Length: 166
Image (cartoon, one colour):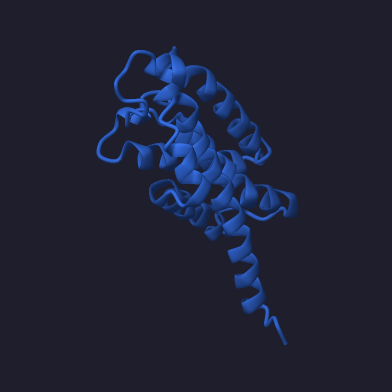
């Protein structure tokens, strides 16, 4: 059960780039929920994935020499769902089809991967903890940064498209 949780049902075993696979599958699941009118389940899923990850990752890495094996992707799932919550919830609230507003799905995915790989500031500090909590925390921070940046970019884009300022 622990292996199934940390690999997100085996997605973490896909190669190359299991973290990107984990983020991509998480994005598709979130998009499916949003298209079914169930976007509020995305942030709930982020919380559940984070809690399950905080419980399962220490058990999966106990006694291992690598504190963050590539096949562990529950952290990417939690972070990606957190990032997507910032756009999918407003789209749902406004009754907008997430496919019609596709940048609201693509931008959080791309930004999350960018922040997860680049690891600026507090994201990198969390990653350098080199423990099971750090495995989860860096991706949660990356998800938060990606979500906020997505909202800022959407605001700028819509302002520019709608003629703001002026």
